[in-house]
Length: 215
Image (cartoon, rainbow, N blue to C red):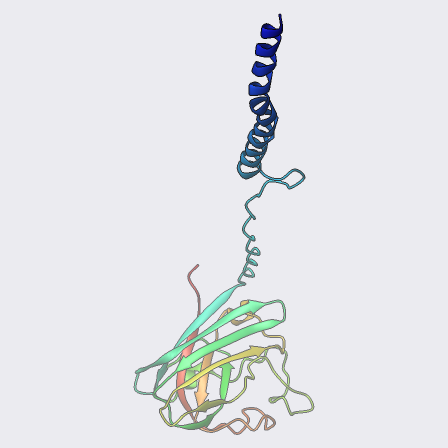
């Protein structure tokens, strides 16, 4: 019996170190598992990343609807092309735009005339200024200005002029197409804006019949 007790005690003593080491290995394995989970998954409470949507471009404003329009092909006293003038009806008046060339440098009166007929060389067939309201000529005249009055043109040394202006004295594109039509005229001298009936503008050097623009 003593021998068996001694053998049992020896067996227990030899197993004690292994039993003492086993509990220490388990936490290490658990720590490794936790570390793997921390590396492979996002931290709790952090929302997943989402793509930021691209900013939308502001919508483009629609261009205003164009009104009734007309144009005039201008020629000089020799019948050579000088350029084109356009007219566009707006709520505030008529927008007049043009590009002319081969004109004498300097200031030149520019008017709308009452008849749509340009016969060279003097263009007298265009009649007087377009004046259905029967007013005096010139923006500086107390009883002016009439529908055919427009600002002077300033022609450069190269004989060219490009301009935009507004006719706001009652002129409309429709009114230029009365029974005998209308025309545009460039004069030899500048308009003084007050002398009736022509502004002391001198002779006529270029003329164009006003025609309806094709849609």
